[in-house]
Amino acid sequence: MAGAYSVSQVNAYIKNMFAQDFALNRISVKGEVSNCKYHTSGHIYFTLKDGKSSIAAVMFAGSRKGLSFQMEEGQQVTVKGSIEVYERDGRYQLYAQEITREGLGDLFERFQKLRNELEEMGMFSAEYKKPIPRYAKTIGIVTAPTGAAIRDIMNISARRNPYVQLYLYPALVQGENAKESIAKGIEVLDQMGLDVLIVGRGGGSIEDLWAFNEEIVARAIFQCSTPVISAVGHETDVTIADYVADMRAPTPSAAAELAVFDYSLFEEQKELYRNTLKKTMERKMERYRFHADQYGLRLKYFDPRRSIRESRQRLSDLEIKIQTILLSMTAGYKADAENAANRMKTLLEKQTVRDRHRLELFASRLEAQSPLKKIGGGYGFVTDQKDHRIDSVTKVKAGDGIKVIVRDGSMEAVISRINQSDEEKKDDPDRR
Picture 1 (cartoon, helix red, strand yellow):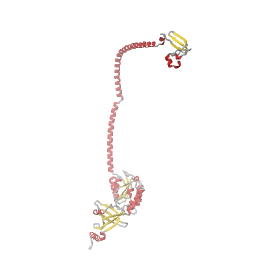
Picture 2 (cartoon, helix red, strand yellow):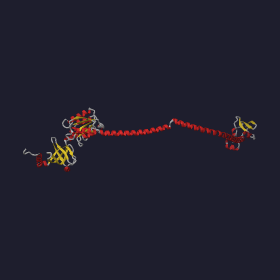
Picture 3 (cartoon, helix red, strand yellow):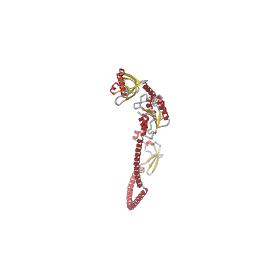
Picture 4 (cartoon, helix red, strand yellow):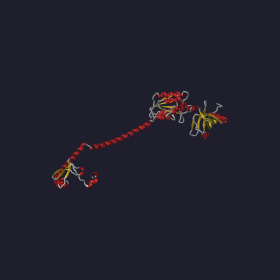
């Protein structure tokens, strides 16, 4: 058709119009950061939006010197730069030269407020976190039935363990009714008694993921008796559901890796355990067999019949030795007995002589001490009438009767006078 323009011509024309517009070449746009991505090349891709519309924006790595903070979802910023047309795609976007932070966006403020409230209630506390079963056999999934998340989970599950059963609750994950749909899916799957639940979706902007920041979803996860793995968006996306869930996975694929155990690895470990057990049993059997042989040898060594034979032989040997000893002892005893008798007789005779001599010595000493012998020499033994010995004049007085015993008899007399020696008078003044 005559007068028709190509797409490239139209896009080039519109780009030229934008380039000639002075206001678009030097413009400052205020809005909330959404869907922010830091590329490996150093470029920053994000969306700037307000309550009614949004515009795509990019800050190239060469312009990063005009950025003094880390850009995050929900930040309220002012972007200075130019609006130009990306000719290849036929769309315009904001090319940022300088970005200043103004404050937090409305959605981010709501996020922080709800997060703080639920944290004060203790819904993020570690003591409420349930352990994820290591060998789950049944897994429930709450996500969109046509999204990339369910496909990734199914592929990874089939690759890791084809025997695990997956139960999908097709929920809305974006839009007005998404929060009720997600909460209902958690409640329904929880009543089925499954091993673990995966709740999540693929990546998107903060608005796309907002259903997982709603209180109704957070409470459904907290009240769920089945362990829940949260898998919302990409690794940099953080939602309220991530805080409440028993485990957070950076992506739905990572959630499948965490929930589904690798059956091939399980088989390898089982085979390893089987071989280890077999080798251990073989080593034990070999050790027990060796011990049994040792015990058999000991049993033979301690066989009672062997002991009886050895004891009988020893008794026979002892009997022969005893007979020999008795014969030798019998011959020796006669000579020893005669010698002993002679020695005994000699000892008795010597002892008799010694005893007789000692007796004679004692008799002579006793005779020398005998009072009768002394009396026989002209001395007498004086007693009172009661036969008490009188050895001092102080024991009698004039008129007392005394008895005098001499060698061949005794005499009785009466004291007529007492004469005391001079030495006694000196010692006894009363006698003077």
